[in-house]
Length: 59
View 1: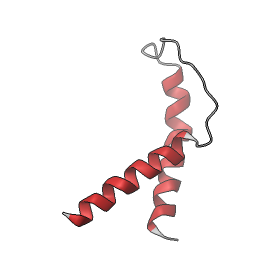
View 2 (view 1 turned 30 degrees about the vertical axis):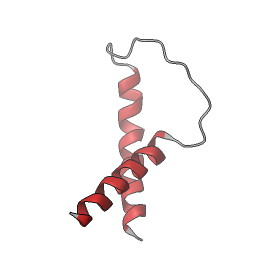
View 3 (view 1 turned 90 degrees about the vertical axis):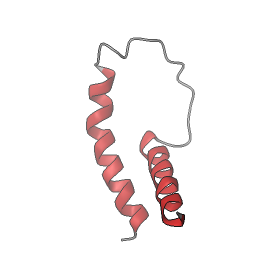
């Protein structure tokens, strides 16, 4: 398993717990326009984390 797989598994597990709890939060009452997306939240977060980690290795 490479680093990207490990990041995705951690992020996916986090999203399974956090997103349902976040949806029930009183701070989450503003309207959201749900547009269809091709990527899940965990996939987007994985890309962002991998990008930032790759930039750290260049410094």
